[in-house]
Length: 194
Image 1 (cartoon, rainbow, N blue to C red):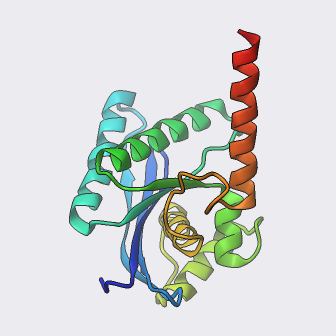
Image 2: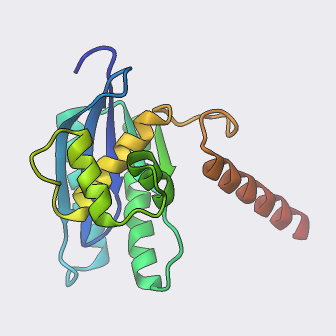
């Protein structure tokens, strides 16, 4: 990795399939693929074992490739609460491991990630995969979609400043700023209600 490059680990959290992708991005925003894969666990295994397997997979990738930062897809509510719960658990594991490693970590919404790599916040999976292949100069789009999503998250993070900002108004996107403001208001409301 060149000294002027930023190496980012992107994580598309999930318990059955957790996408992991690492890219190096230079100052001119040119990106190159370092690693891509999917950590898989059996839906039949106990949740604790599955979380341990996801953690071991992320730690292995961190140890082998030594990224400068970690970016995780932000969990959003869906109709399927079981899916949301599993995604949130895997996301928490990823953020915990980044903190343990002393790495800056950030979350990005799916629409932010899609907009960053395709220019369109509502792009579908095939459009994201096609753009990832084009950006990284790959012969074929990464498979499965979780792998391409992880690379897209890493690229989004690198292109949007590459670090987690302690100042919410600093390197955050407008959507992230709105989310942080909403969380601040909710905390204030809860404190005043108790």
